[in-house]
Image (cartoon, rainbow, N blue to C red; front, side):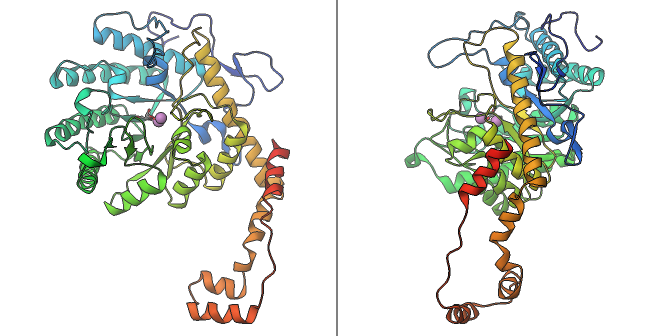
Length: 441
Ligand code: XLS
Ligand code: NI
Ligand code: NI
C-alpha cells in the first residue's frame, strides 16, 4: 500500500469493513456503514470520525500509580524526528485501516518538544512537511489542530491566563506555530481547550483580569489565523475542572457568554466532550443543545465517563441510551458546523493487545451509527416529535402566539390570568417519552 512507510505496524489486521449486525467478526463494523444514507447524508458525512493522535499514538497508559503498559513499536528511535515520522507512519496506517477520514493533534503529539523554543519550531516544521506528504498520498484529512499549553511546567499557572506576561507571550508564540502547522495541513478547524486556564485558589487570582487577558489572546489568535487565510472554525472545548480546580470554560453556557462578551462569537463555536459535560453535572445532550441553541454546535469529542468516578476517564463510547439522546439533538440541529466526531478516548491501562485499539474505535463508531439510526427512526416515525410539539401548542395560536411575537406586555398577562381563572394541570409525560426512546432502541 502506497500510504504505508516501509514498516507495517498493525500486522495481520486488514481494513475494517461493515458486515452488519449479524456478523460475529470482532474486527468488523456492525452498524457503521460509511456509505449508508441516513436523514439525507451518508454516515461518513454525518460523523467525520477522527482519531485523537494523543491517546492512540502517544499515551502509553500511565496513571498516577504506575508507568505505561504499552510498548509502541513506533516509539523506539532516539532521534526525535525519526520517532515522529515512525509515529506518523503508524497513525496513517491505523486511520486508513479503520476506514476513517480524519485525525486531530496537539503540536507536541506530532513531535517531542525541543529543549528550546527555536528547536521546537524546527521540529514542528519538519514533521509538518512529512505529514503533508502522508496526507497527500492517503486522502486522510485534518479535522482540527491544537496546542498543548498545559503539560509543560511553564504553564502550571496557566497559559493565556498566566499572571506572568512572559508566559502569556510564550503561549502566544506556541499557538502561532500550532496555527501555522494546522493551516499547512489544511486543517478544517482549530481547537482551544483551556486545560490550565483557570485557578487552583481564588485567593491568589485576579479572575477578571485573567479573563480579559484570554479574551484579548483569542482575538489575537483569530486575527493572525485569518490573516494567513485560515477559513475554518475556532472551537472552544469546555471543561469545568481537571487539571485546575476551576476552569474558565466551565461549560457551554459559560463559554458562549464569554465569546459574546469579547466579540468572538462569529468565529468560534463549541467542541463538546461527553465526559466534560458529565463533570460539569450536565448530560452530553444538554451541552449539545446549549451549543445548538446558540448556533454553535461545532464538533464533538466522543468518549464517556464512569458514573462512579469523578474524573475524565475518557473511555470509548458504548452507551446507546446516552448517544441516542445526543443524536436526537444532533439531527434536530442539522448536524455539526464544520467539525466532526473525534474519539478523544483511550483504551484501559490493562488493554495491551494490538487489536484492542481497533476494537475500541469499532465499538465507538458502531455506538454512534446505531444511535443515529435509532434517533432518525424516532424522529421520522414515532409520536415523539408530535408529543413534544403538543406541549407548546398553546403558543401556536391566539394570545400565546402574540406573546411569542412580542405583542403583549405584563399587564396583558395580568388580564389573561384574571380571565382564565384556575388552570387545569398539563402532564409532562416524561415516562411516555422515555418509553418511546426505549422502544426504538
Ligand atoms: C482534555 C481534553 C483535551 C482536548 C484537546 O480533557 O479533552 O484532550 O480535547 O486539548
Ligand atoms: Ni477533548
Ligand atoms: Ni477531556
